[in-house]
Length: 333
Image (cartoon, rainbow, N blue to C red):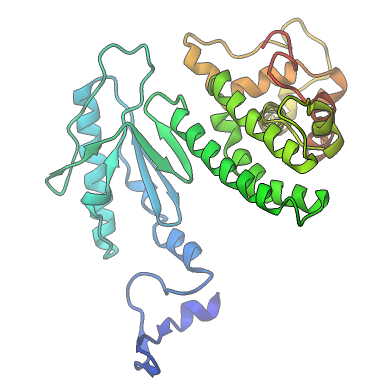
């Protein structure tokens, strides 16, 4: 890393077998290096600091997003103008360009909102397009956070993996097929499950159906054959079990990180209370639903201070349970 800073010189291969002279990189970050994303984050580290009131920046490598809050169309337009102007000024100082044609925005609101906000947001005198769904770090986020579009995407990716399993069934043993399942099917449903798992039950049932198909392919079963025991035998978490595992583990980590002055071993009257809320939309928060899952667990789970041991114990518990719904885990859910 020290060498990269002290000697920022690079070659440029213009034509096959012809290399240019060594030139010093005066702006930006060196290309073609495994440290590239890290350098780029360091290069943009000051961007969140230029955001004004009502705005925040989220950076992940070269994927930059700005969130703006407001209680009216006018307040959102003003906050967007100020934050985008500050961001553009910062990027101009770094000799970086924003492409307005590849920029858009999404307005989030609940389905019960009668007056949908459609603010006019401009960047370089170009009006940005308002979209109903956008992709952020591999997740398809819609304006109502229903996750319907993302579920469609996950189911399609799982279907492609199941097709590969069908083609390989005749030449692979069950152990190899299980590895293929985790690589081509399970990986797609596991990514972001703690967020999109808050969708409606019908969406999660679609994913569960794909899981069942995968297990039937591995064991050459009929469509009407039950596979619940095979979930347990193979050690595969159902989509409901995986959602419970990830959200409950997240909530438990927050509990363990709480200062000792707020923690005690006493079984008080309100120790199982969860955060109060006014909207059903609040229940989609990972922290909220994770706390509800924790309250459904036996006391022995809650006293575990080691996050890794807690997750392993909970995973074993959920594998043995193999829930086909959240109600199978807790009656109050």
